[in-house]
Image (cartoon, rainbow, N blue to C red; front, top):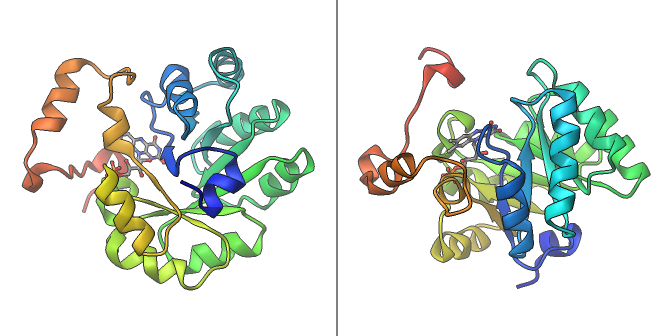
Length: 229
Ligand SMILES: Cc1cc2nc3c(=O)[nH]c(=O)nc-3n(C[C@H](O)[C@H](O)[C@H](O)COP(=O)(O)O)c2cc1C
């Protein structure tokens, strides 16, 4: 399937592994990229040295495009972003911070930049600084989403920007991909789905627990990430 996202990122399928701390490791990133999607390494828990080593490990496991995710608000994130730029990583995904400098430096070597956003305001701002695509994160992405559900947020942003949108939060299979395409997105990023896949480093007990949850229990909010309510 071809969309503006597959063309932009040079991938075969409009499926993205988002950067999930301790889960989006080199093995899983490479597995997703080798399968035709785009794997994004989570640099959050990594030191700059570990980020560089992980990028090089991914390059040993795949010759396909991949990305590195940086949560700019977190300590050490800018240093990790600098490593990703030095290593000329094909795709940089940034969230929670000003990414204009990242866009400029990535574009110098032909890299692409995806901005993670949870509101129209931030979507328009990311577009204005030259981001190549948006990772639009709905409420279903648990602590990582905003207040607005994917069903409302994705079409709302997709109809206001010119750059392509990747939908995330609640998408986990072909039905979800079709729904996202209908809403105006051109790819989906699947967190929980890839986290429970065979190549994920999570323990099997955790994978089974997640898969067995009912729809009432499927989104878990933790104050560790989103703060007390
Ligand atoms: C276990 C887990 C860890 C995650 N870690 C991060 C993270 O470190 N940084 C981040 O930006 N998003 C993180 N996310 C959110 C995902 O990037 C994505 O927004 C979310 O999983 C999408 O919703 P879905 O699980 O319904 O596909 C995490 C998600 C999960 C399930």
